Length: 206
Image (cartoon, rainbow, N blue to C red; front, side, top):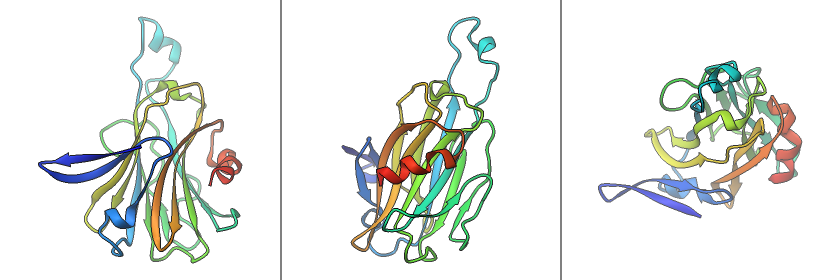
């Protein structure tokens, strides 16, 4: 299922639910989609009870957004994360590690130049992991979104409302399909502290 957001009668973005998808190419107005950004944001969930914050031992949460690149056969081509901030060909770049999630807007961003992606790069998977092992029941207001960098317009957004005792999330995929780029909200729970721990599970889902 997906929803349209409106602003004074104008469609602003597509709001996705789990397992729904949208053609970013069509949302961007056709063949002009060349550069996008995958943004991820989150906050620390409010402590519950007088001793809850003391028991938690931290007032911030360190989540890491990462991108895994697969070819058409599902073979892993490249990985972009906080220990490798750019793909080997330079078409994908990571904004860097955010250790707290404080502030509004995107906490980490992955910039993608679609015109420079290798021709055999067919599917990009966006993951989020908790490096310190903090679970997602300590996360609030988490989301993933896609921005068209030609005009900084938000094309699609996926609100992450699935709280639980897991440390990784396979958030979404971006896939070539019939000459278009299709963004799919996956929302699959996982266990792992870095993107390397989620690669095999991501491969099975594409």
